[in-house]
Image 1: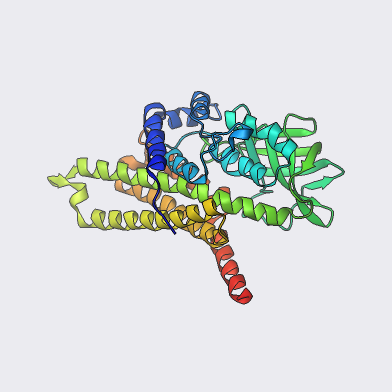
Image 2: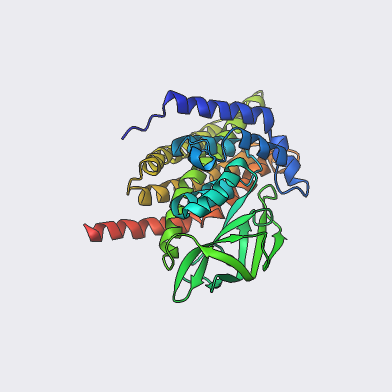
Length: 371
């Protein structure tokens, strides 16, 4: 197992960081958050031109054909910049689902548009508050049409295509729905992080088609979520690392009693714990990235590990960021709340860390029984 990225891959990450530093300061995230815009349109066009949206898409389908390892490094930089983009919904979920299960016709119809940024995709899974129960979906797929409601759906207000888990007779299927068709109603929801929009999708006889094997929707969804957990985990790691860097810089420059706040033992200890959490998440991320890129069966466990570790690193780190900035950390003018908002939203996007921790236990038990 080689956990070292190649020089070419490191160059891609370096280029991504430089591009985002030049085009996506935290003011871009704040501007989207404080406006009615669902995402940064100009930045979206820019990352499309950089080839990031189609990083894992073969060139035959209009992608840049880089690969999964390159994509995880790009995701890390997206997280570091708090980029206000529908990147996770479209790239980690919709594009991955089509790559895995799409027919040749479905791939040719949607992948070039997703890779170029002309279309935005999403994955409609949740049906209300709490962790989704994959085996108990209320949305129904019958006779080529969808009926029911999905909420919240990340970027559902702006997406062109949705991958939907729906009840199909006595089982479940993954289906592909063109959101521009009739029978689809969207309602934008208030989001804790307005720079990542949420919506309610209501289907009333909307046309849809099966993605992958009919009746196997739960198993197919689990695989998509495992892959997305790795990619989103690197985005969370990037956010946690940036939050630590900014907080370290602030505490070194803030003085109390004639000395930098960073020199006080309580701050040093908390920062050491923060750094350790980030490194634990990163090491789990390397394992998961290797498993994702090689198609290893270890992905089932690695995805759970990185999902839990990365969620905790970003969540706890964003809280520490506010605390270590003192009184100003709670104010709107400082950027701490941007990290806190993003950490909260990403931690629930694919199901909570608690749900993934329980999934890890179940998978370890299943592996032990099989042995």
